Image (tube, rainbow, N blue to C red; front, side, top):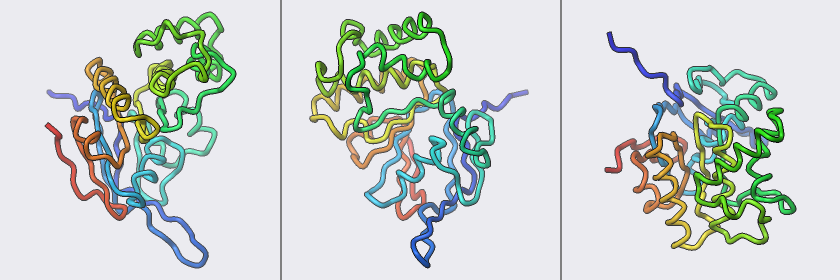
Length: 232
């Protein structure tokens, strides 16, 4: 008998409404989506399409107005803020366009930060941070502060930080938006390498060229998924 793999992301008929004065704006409409372990998915859509709202819901930064969301088999759509925070820290690694590094802190300590929140000992978290920096080919820069690093190197530090707790999901929001084309291409190459190693990645972008390098593209327009297809 075949056992079905537990999805990393299992979204069922999810909707998200926002109150704007006296009117209600529906940012997401009847969205259903499944992402299995080891997939590399790009969510693409124009500005205002709902992709950021969807990313916030997938990343447990927000909760839906209706519908269900299971992350790694756990229903998270009804959790309170404290529970969502715990799930985020344990199961999701975030990569943002603006890096979000602490300016006066070394690369190593920036990467180790999520483990400090998880009460991991200093020795263990520094060892894990070194391993994460090695995965992104930046171990030799572990003692440098962000101001001493290029934009691409800063994003590699941010990716290492997202990987340090071995999350079920790597969630990237416009990760090349602050980089030049060549450096952005190198970062996307790193995502491809990590995916080949088995990391599950969901990348949010407005750039069709970046989306095509994922294994699967999901296009969202006016809050609804309009296409979901393999890139290659």
